[in-house]
Every structure is written in C-alpha cells, then in structure tokens.
Length: 632
Image (cartoon, rainbow, N blue to C red):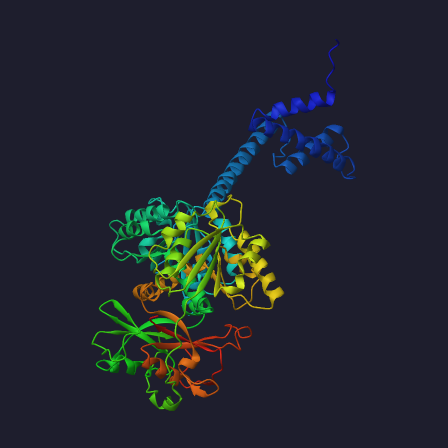
C-alpha cells in the first residue's frame, strides 16, 4: 500500500512545535525573526516613501537598518561591519540586563502575591480573636464577634483553616456583608500543625476559639488542634483563654486536658438536645434562647453587688430599673435563681441581663409594684405529655433521655424512623433513665411519606420534634436537611387540611435552609451549629459566664422557662413589669421578660420581650407567657 503523504502545512506546524520544545532559546529566536519580518519591511516602506530620503540604494538601506535598530532598541549605528556588530552586541547586553532585572522583580512580586493569596504571612495583631477550623459555625461566631466589637476602634478576627484563603474570604464576605471596623484576616493551613499555628499569632491573641467540623472524626480533630496549640504556645509568656466545642461526651475530658487549666470545652450535642426538649415542652422557648445568646439585644453580665451586699437576694430583683437580676456568682460558682432570702455575701457578683456593661445601674423599684395585682392562686399544674419524635440522629438518644427523666405518669414518647436508622434496642437503652410511668415506642417508617404521617394522628401529640439527619450518615453530596424540609412540607399540608396548628420543633443542620423551612416565622427552629456558635462567642467575650451557661443549660439546674402570665398577674389587668418580677419572686423565680401571644407573628422578636424596664406597663391577655429563670 502506498504511504500517504503528510500535508505540507501539518509538517511545517510539527517542525515549528518541535523547535519551540527546545526551550527558551528557540522561543527567543522565533520572536526575533517575527519582529524582523514585521519591522524591516515596514521600515523600508517608511524610508522609500520619505521625500527627504537619500538617493543612493546603499544609503537608503543604511537608513532602513538605522530605523529598524531604533524600533527594536538594537542600536542604530552605521558604518563598518565591525561597528555595526559591536552596536548590536551592546544593545543585546542591555536588553538582556533589563529583561533579566524585570524578570527577577516580576518573579519576586508574583511569589509574594501568591504567598499572600495562599495566606502564608504571619498576622501581626494584638488582642485579636483567633478562630481555628472551618465549619458552618464560623459564620455565626464571626458575625457575633463583629457585633461585640462594634464599639471598638481596632478589632481583628483571624481565621486559620485548611482551606484556600480566597475562598474563605469570599464565603465570609458573601455571608456576613459589611463587618464595620473589624478586620477579618484569613490564613490557610492545617490548624493541627504547631508550625502553622503561629501564622495566626495565638500568642498575642485575646482569645482562641476551636470549631468542630461536622464529620465523623471532628472531635478527635479538635483534641489534636488543642494539642498543637499547646505545643505552639510552649514557653510563651502569654497564654490566651481557649474556648472549644466537641460533639461527643467521650471526648470532653481529653479536650479539657489538651486545652489546659484555663480552657473551656462545650459539649454541643448535649446542649442542643436539652434545648430542643425544652422548646418541645414550652413552644417559643428557642426564640428566648436566641435573644439571650446573640449580641443584638441584651446579654448576661457580671456586676459587683455594691450597696446590696449583706441584703437578701430578693431585694436585688427590684433594685435595677433597666436590668434583670437572675442570680449570684459566689467563689466562681453560679447560683441561678437562689431563694429570695439568700444573703448577698461580700465578694459575690450579680448575674444580670442588660444591654451593656454600663447600663446596670441601681434604683429602688419597689414603689412600682402593685401588690393587689399579684396572683395568689396556685401555679398551673404540670401534666402528662405526648411527644412525637420524627427521625433519628446522634442527638436523638440524648433527647429521649431528657424526655424520659422528668416525664409524669401517663406520658408517652413515640419515635418514628427507618429500620436502617435505629433499632428497638437502641431506643430502649436511650430511655432507661426514665420513670416507670412513661411509654416509649418505636415505629419504623419513612417520615417523608404522607401515609406514614397520616397513620400517626400527629394532632394528638403535645409536641412534634423533627430531627435532621446526620451528615455522615448519607452520601457526601447529600444535604442533611433535605429529609427535614420534605417532612415539614407534609406537616404543613396536614395543618392546612385540618385547620389546626401543630406544635412543631425543628432541628436544622444548615442555617441557610432556615428560610426554606415551610413553617411560621415564630416557630421553634434549632440550628444546632448556630446555637453552639452563639454560645462560644458569648463565652469568648466573658469567660466567667461559662459556668453560668453550664448551669443555665444543665438538665437539673435553673433554666429558662415559659410560664402562663395568669400565674403571676390577672389577665385583662394593666400592671408594671415590676409587679410581675415581685410575683415571680414569691415563687422563687426571676422574671426576665414575656412573650405576647398577640404579637407572636407581627413583632420583630415574634412577641418575645427580654429585659423590659421595670416601669413598663401593659395589659396582660390570655395566652401571654412570662419568661423566668427557675427550676421545673
């Protein structure tokens, strides 16, 4: 068979590519030929069309050479061949020197810009907040720190994570928008490497926060990061306070040991489970928790007792016109809602809820109390409850345990989940700490199917808890809230067809899915990561509040409660909030606000009012609730 001839164009292109593959010298040669191919003909045209050009062809060629040399900066000397050669040689040396210098400067600048883009330069800040790790909580923590630093001139937050610096900056900028005076600094590198940690300058930081990511080995990663931080700060004169969070109780002790004596380690799953159960028992409670934990409203502060030293704690409740007193801190131990007759000892600090640390001022508010308006009847008795738990995740056993611990006889908890999620034995083990009067039942079923929900008669339950799926249980690309959103849509349909509202408490994993949830704006939605992020931000600004929050969110301590307003003041009667505080004091509780049923869907806080002034007057209606801190 005759060999097929390769087209001339293809052979020329192959030869050209082969010469370029030889390196920079070939590239320079081709560039020189290309320039000469353009410049020489153009220079000849310019010379031959010049009316003042020399007459002889030799002189015109010399003029073409001179014009070509000036254009290419190769020297335009004419004369003997030796003179022209030396002129070209000098021009080439000059070109080589200048191009080399420009190349070195360009390379240095490029390397520097690349290093900056990679986030490998050391942060030179003092008193800044350092965040180690990256998760959905980073947006909550950073936004709260920005809000807390709004009145400071030079505040900075440095984030160190094993992610691209540019991507982190874009994500924070998109999610948070304007950050005011606070400087956001991102550095790229593994926070578990002690040689990388100095990039964020933890030795000069005001606080270090270690975030857990939502992956199976998240807690082990937190412990490793804390060990790396301890190694990086070895020998440092200053050790900043450390706030970290783990998911599993088994890792908390190890994390505390790694964090050191001043470290604070939160257990995110336990706190989240307790708050979900509390919200299920008293709808609307999640809104109160959010009001107390974010920096947008009033927060917890510790203030000196001053002139209240030696007086009963009950007197302090009506001694702050614009602040709400909720307890004492004695020798580092919080006493929330202690008995009113408890004396305020020297050295005690008062735990108050107020707008800022300088708004807690004292004045006697006893004259604002209308003693005749204080309700004298017994409180509304607790009753047996029926709770429906839709879905199962790693926090579900903790919730079942909490539901069972204080259940009254006749109470029931029904769990609905797939057989691949939970077994009867697992549910039984979760409720082993409960009382004998509680019925705990598991129903296997798909909660995203309408027939499953219709078969359950969801309207017969006092509360319905919808749990999000663990991210590590599904595929990596699966959104853990997908099933939750589908279930909420079906529950919403049942509400519309029956005309009856369901008391639903929803757990979402991703805060971005909150606007997608088909529920009312004032409904109880627990964003587990956001909740812990708020808590970490609060403690980072005042680490002495860690023990207060530990007591507030503990299973057996004095927590936030919603009580019927009619237990404190008669409905239909106008009173001051000081009267409500006095009524709560008689019951051994600290009133800190209220939730109005009429304003639950129209006001910015959905009816929740925390820390109203003692002289605020309002007419109490049926369905209004008082927010108190006290025991069950």
